[in-house]
Image 1 (cartoon, rainbow, N blue to C red):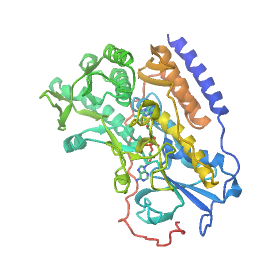
Image 2: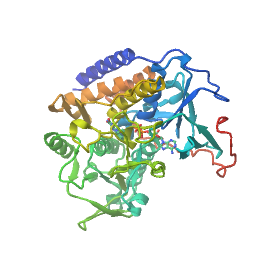
Image 3: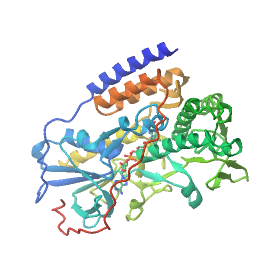
Image 4: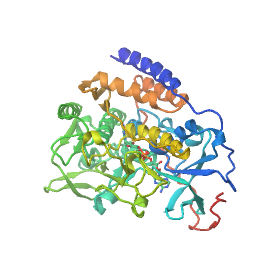
Length: 477
Ligand SMILES: Cc1cc2nc3c(=O)[nH]c(=O)nc-3n(C[C@H](O)[C@H](O)[C@H](O)COP(=O)(O)OP(=O)(O)OC[C@H]3O[C@@H](n4cnc5c(N)ncnc54)[C@H](O)[C@@H]3O)c2cc1C
């Protein structure tokens, strides 16, 4: 089995590299890097995730240097996080640094600014950005792209927000992985009665992301526990809580049912119709009064758009996403566009009020369309509607097991897992990262998973906010 998997991994890698190589990369410079005193039209993109980075890359490809347009991408972190592999990074199947790419290396002709967007003034067309030092800089724009994604929604449960871990960012992945290793270290020493909390791992949220994270954590703790001789394997409990009567609303019933059975076969307790009502540092409380004693509670049950966007005088849907038209333009705001997890983009195929789902797969396609639309509008040409029929849906539920919906056909087992790896390896930006991940996967077949608890060094303390206030919008740096 190992040899066959090794052969598949090598084949995936070769395919991933060649598909990656076939993708078009941006070429000649779009503009000089100095933007001071610029009379070029400026497109500002907020958010360095799937929506933001790929909109910038598409604009680089679409616009020629003589067209007098400058593109500025502003984001909190200086890297692009390849979220589909985040669950694998939590489970030590790939190294954390192999699933991130420096945005500066991805962008060839756009300007990148690493900072926290603090305020957006749609009327005066100004964005305020705070750098790590605390200094505030202001940027004017001609076109603004909102690609700020989402943040975890605890639905007002302050105790859950306080006690639960989340898996949304690279920092989250480091924290969860460290926490798991740390509780195993404690469990190796503590007596049996204290061990029960430490060896119980609970995750709330049976959507696609939650299932992938739980599948990965389950594999990891069971494999890692072999290094802890005083932690009996039989004591390890992994529990997946889902409020609805089935897992993964994103896929067909039959696939969801296969996933449930598969998780259970791998040792995960799947609790359906189990809504979380609260949490303490040692327990998860359910609405029906049940309690689970645990030191590890992970919340993956809700996402809402970035809070910053709620300040804007724009129409939003019930989940807080900004409503845009089919071209991704904000109605009534000629120069404002939104995409990805923070946008409600109408999906006419699914019905009148339906919107495209919030997945990386969609954000990527939306970015391709939006980049072309903004380039068209800058040339006084019409923007076109976004139209993307979803043909492939893939998810992994643990090592060598996956589920997929391919062109209307539902499959499960080893093939979807292999397809998932091949597809996402091909999508991972930059050849060196593809090589590193393929090596991680190959080595994972031979060696035990890494259980080093990483020391976390905080960023240098920020100075008090607003230590520098530039009032010259066109002199941002
Ligand atoms: C664990 C996990 C697994 C997933 N697996 C899959 C999968 O297998 N397949 C799939 O299709 N999708 C998957 N997704 C969903 C996918 O990641 C999202 O749909 C996608 O990231 C949305 O892209 P986006 O650009 O809208 O937002 P994001 O990718 O979240 O990007 C938003 C960016 O904005 C930045 N930002 C936010 N606020 C500010 C601010 N105030 N100032 C500066 N910067 C800011 C953030 O730092 C981030 O860089 C997964 C998500 C998670 C969390």
